Amino acid sequence: GSVRDVLVRGHVFLNCSLTESFCIAILEASSAGLIVVSTNVGGVPEVLPPDMIHLADPNVDSLVKELSRAVSEKNENADPFKFHQRVREMYSWERVARETILVYDRVLKKPR
Image (cartoon, rainbow, N blue to C red; front, top):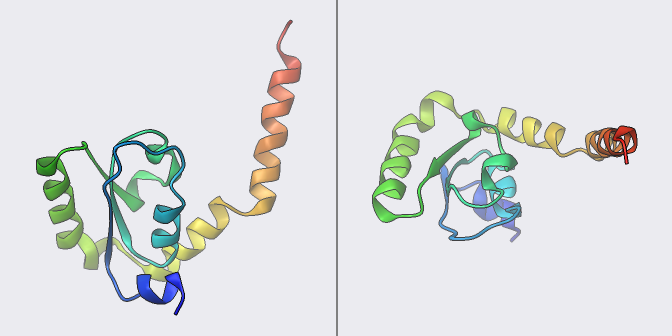
């Protein structure tokens, strides 16, 4: 089976990293329709919008609190198809290219 086949059986994905730059695993989980709970470290807060992720401090009490919130809210807020579509739109090659061009344009316009 694939990673997707395993993920779609769940409802919540828990990522307990102490350091993380860009976490592909939370993208995969969200794309499979799971609510993501993750430690608020490194680049994690920038990967998904706030309504698709519960951010916790990197300690047990905070993780338990956010995991409990995610479990209690899972039926209210999570539409697996909409999550998949949103991740697909956020990380399409077209959007990446547009945003890369914007960065280069801003850099080129800065005085040297």
